[in-house]
Length: 239
Image (cartoon, rainbow, N blue to C red; front, side, top):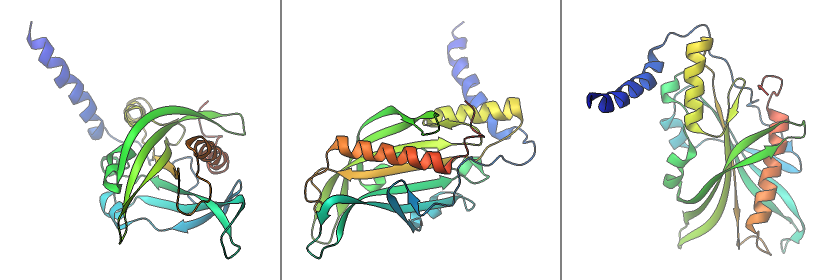
């Protein structure tokens, strides 16, 4: 009877691997996210930036990127030249290609290569103005950045989630099982968009009074809610 104990992992692994050999029916269903970024989200101005060379090389050739630096003026704070000092966050939307084996992945895999030491991770509920809500993953990290003179460490807060054709999840394994179920029961694949936003906080050199984690968390969550209300086609998302 001992053979049953080693047979179960083999069967489970085979079930997971078999999903890539199942026949596909028709075209891959697109994500419910609009990849064309707006110029403004709430009170944030968006400036488009190109993807990095590493992102382009690592992911499939048909992967699509929409990235932006987002800024919002801080009330009553000005530079010595009289310019408004803004809050700043980074937005990244990555749409998977048609090759699901060479597609997007959870950011915990690539963040260490970008200098992040992840300290904590938890689920948070984001409430959208249309009455819908979903879970995002909230990461707290310390990011080390190298400058010409020295390296600096910055506290960083990141929110991320995945948007498929009709579902939203913040869990990579959950996304994998959704794909398995869709292929088996619905005869379809769906392209997933990985949405990530991040913001530094603490005593930042360009901010007069530091930004607390609570302030960064509130502003980041508000941005995610505003972005989701505008850029996700909620008529397609299952309740």
